[in-house]
Length: 160
Image (cartoon, rainbow, N blue to C red):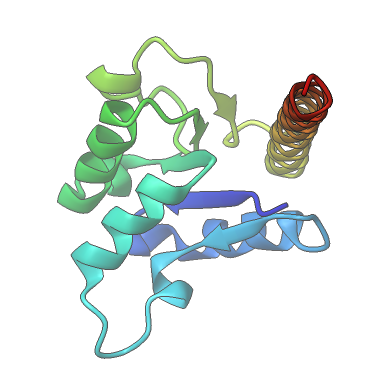
């Protein structure tokens, strides 16, 4: 199963992004960080838009830098419009989340960074497990449906 995480951030906060990437290493997730995931010659807006659409979890590193970034605001808006699960990590104490996500509980990275990033890792793994369970249940339902169709077909041909 593929579980995709999109990380929205200001390039000024790339050190924090890399710490989060390290926390998520050795987990069964694929991480999209534009700085590392978009190749030269690719269209940045197109790749970012597709990655947000395809992600299972949208993580935003919220700081004064992110607040001042048009990209981050647009990414949050797109994720909200697509009703993605959004996990805000607040880097700057006292900084309020923007309107689209102002009602979400956030992880305060500013107070205890290591604990906060570990907590973000646990949430990502929990979301992965939730998706894996849903996928397994769907596969079981599909199998039962196909078995039922097969049984009905066998019954129908034996009625002659």
